[in-house]
Image (cartoon, helix red, strand yellow):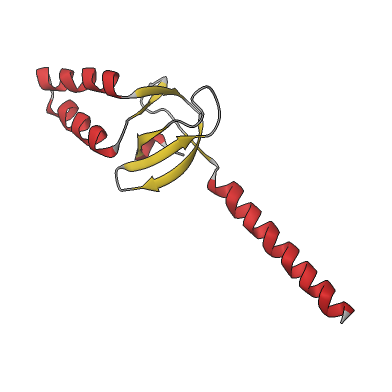
Length: 115
């Protein structure tokens, strides 16, 4: 009986350790800048990101409106800010900021801005 209890205890400890490692690994994301940016835009939702991206791709006056829209709609978050991924799509992820002055803030970031 003593051997069985010690084996059960070791297995339980191993499972607990595995669960902790998975939880820690799940929170290991951070925001990264691209193309000479100094901050990462955090959009309120994916629909806003898609609409502004479409405007920017059109160029000309419409493209400039997309740039203005991004500056108004998106919060600028510092490079390397730690985040937790809440959900993902082919365009990017909904994240929650886990540290810093914006801790707890949620929003959508483009796929290329998440590491």
